[in-house]
Length: 629
Image 1 (cartoon, rainbow, N blue to C red):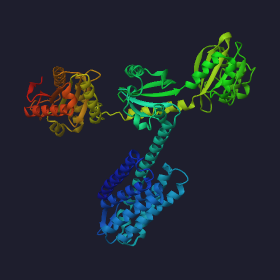
Image 2: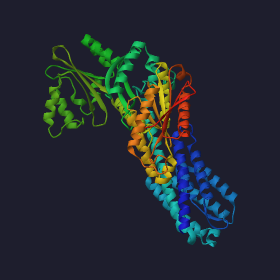
Image 3: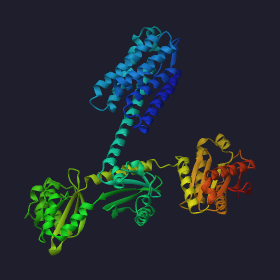
Image 4: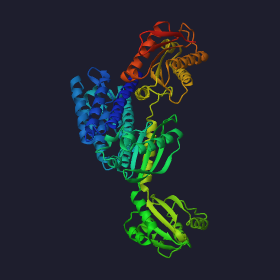
């Protein structure tokens, strides 16, 4: 029995892996497979069933038990007739192919289990499947497996229920639970992603994300329309220098670089672009290590409102005409706090207290009505009169505030004093902007989660290094500055792992990473895990001599750690280091040769005895060798 359980556990791992592959594919390529997800689910479920049958437990010649029923039932419940039909067809064809005395019973079992999934689908199609539905389906699958073991002729003859009934039922039930939870989680992630994309693309404001060099990573449709591009994809990779006059582009670039350098957000900065007045807020984006990796911005077009405010200062008569057609609410209070004028937009902005906002009403009466209806969330209901007095006292002070209503909507209230002590109040509905801010925070969180760092050592991984290498190579080539590269390999690391075990090997990799980070201290230096026990250090604007200094510092720090290594000729963990350096035209023409030369230097260092530093210049065939400290 222990053997059967063990085989089923392996079978369960395969089925779970297959469904996990489907989950990743459906998320990564959701646009490519739009409209075909049920077929894709059916194909993957059928494939999982086939793989399970290939790993089946043989009770007797031609009689097999496996976990094919879990993916078949789940395909029916989540994908309906299309997915169930595709999955059952694939499983049935494979079962007929392998044949055996129980082939007919196997086909019947496949049809029955697909029917169980479709029955579950009919119960949940009006509602989204939930954890309870998965639990009930798993229980149904287990029960049906037991019934089939007793009812099907061939299985009953070989006493399948007695021989493997409990393991088969239990593991099919477990497989249904595991795979069902994977599919359920995938659906939730897809929904969250669609909501985020919809909020980002349909926001009335200008939304964008830029990289560390102030180049656009993503923009919404409003941004592409602002700069007259046909699609958002046309703007990706561009910067303000490609879109605006140089003087304006330099101003925007330096302000954004200051935000990313200091980490201090830029809130409500006035910008004039394409003849429009824009109110921009920009926040730095950070990775898991807290490093700034880019910038997210939301910009509101306030051109119309700015024009209206200028007209309001010129003439009260013109104000009255303008108020009728403006989108914001507007009100005027005299110096005593009585309402002199307001438009319908002002009343509609506060639906619960709008009836109190009439000409002649005092600010304290309006605020009392607000408190009675609990319209605002910032009210201290334990001291209402104190709150009314404090809020009324600030009416005649120039201020900008944002408040949230009980309904969840947001309002921006801008108060400005005019001649004679009159207070003008402009109320804007900023709910969309707040939602956009939430969407940006969510996007920033996803960007942090996608930060390309190595999970074991916490340093930059291979993918992020490749991108940084190309970027720094181009920058150094433009500036005619040197770019140096260290390629480091831990000597005899496989023997270290074999001798001390993988946990010790992991700790060794962490210590090596720490020594490298302590050696390459500048913010522009990049330390990355290149693969396995191999590391790279990218040193922008660093000469060959400077790179050697960093390599020697690392060798000293590693020696100081005194990591014992009985299988090494040095009795401790050491590293071989290959260095290459390029500048100017050589770097611009073939940046990839910097990698190949460093790799060649590393190879020669290992061939010449390990635990040494070897330098290969990009434009030289000879190498300078130096024994590590």
